[in-house]
Length: 220
Image (cartoon, rainbow, N blue to C red):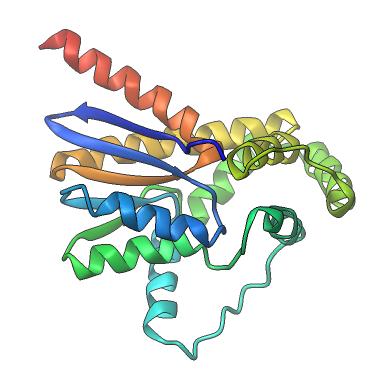
């Protein structure tokens, strides 16, 4: 199995550790826990919204709490196809493991993705009505779509390329990367930072952070 993405930057005097994860894969939680034991950091960050972090914490604190949100058709198809690489579970085990680790070490976990209102506005800005209709038609064939991949990392990148084939959705995901990179820069003011990012988004976020890091080095 190929190695997963790991990057390190220095921005505003803080170290930023950027780790790519395959969302939903149970084995990712164990891999992440092993990595975290060797890092000292002040802030943790997840690629979800504040509302989602709050929901995950409530879920983790109440074993009897059931997830009321029904997975979408793309999410169900993703989980089904990813399962050939190992056990898949929702909510993402890597997210809950990260929150648990940070809680046990008195580290704050912050959201770096858009909230629901911001996402809705971004969706309307980037995805046209025609593209939405085309996407709805394409989603009907998701369960029959074959993804030729040798490992989980390869799978999620190819799955993402298929799901976001239409230009509007590509622009929307690029905007997400921009927002997350800006929020990472903001959080770096508070100290060393560990950021968990989906493998399919990590390249875009990495490039933005590298540009900022390089500019800071040139100024010093």
